[in-house]
Length: 152
Length: 263
Image 1 (cartoon, rainbow over the protein chains, first blue to last red):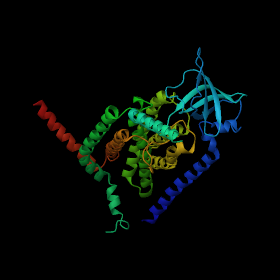
Image 2: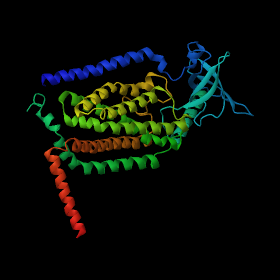
Image 3: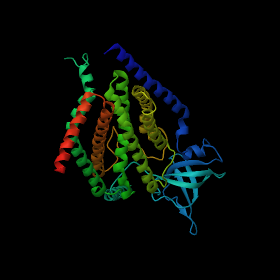
Image 4: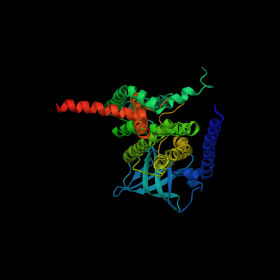
């Protein structure tokens, strides 16, 4: 390789490495600030700020969803596997919102550690399955659970 | 001949004239293959692949969203590498490829963002949020726009090419950030379905048409990039004898054809 071209190649590599380093350090400095939501553990543990508008995300706990009979008010719990946070919301839930699925609630955490949400988003996972396959899988799972209970 | 001590082959490859004449021969074939693959993937994905258990038919937008996002990211590397080759070897053709790749990448990034917004409404419940994935993808659109703008910001083609190449290279840092954003931060966007190291978290009946669509988008990208680059070659080489001869030959055939028509 011609020495001049070799030098220019080195400059190009230096340019890419240097910008990666700079951006890498900036991102390292920002770390958690890049997160879109807090986990229930961060909110209950006091890591998240109080009395400000924030987002909390987690899995909607099975059987925790309660609806008011005369209004759009709902209450449910989200969990990250460590802590559980109660969310209250008045409005229409997204179509994909369901127990056992992930959701993100935005609002203010009140003194009773309940998130008074003004917006709920459903967070779906990266798995895609046809309905028949999903049904078959649920069926097999149920069967397995029953067998387990039978053998105990 | 040792390929690595003798670089003449590389310089011959960089001849705009050589590229124009050879690409012209492959174009009809490439167009037909691209059309067939895209049509197959689209019909398969939209009409024959099963619906998703949770999302129903709205998941089908994946057959446009994911291939467009793939090529928006891969196309950025193509643009940056073309820019680097231009900087190091002073190769004119390489700069033309870089300039041609910018608007194609910008459009693909826009398609990825737009289909994402359309898909986000029925699934997440919102068109847009400022999470790490979506924001870094928007930065990609601005980077493409920046490279495009720099091409018209200088009187000298050489200065514009150099500035564009430097911005393209600086921007490459954003590509791994976009790719890893869903793992590094909590985002609304879900993690990748297609993974490098493990099986895709998608049923094969849904995954196969997606692979066909990704292949189709790669072919389409190659096709549009070659067409754009050919235009750029003619524009920049318009004062060379071979382009003049080409234009003169075209004009003669057109005149003959017109005369034949009028008779």
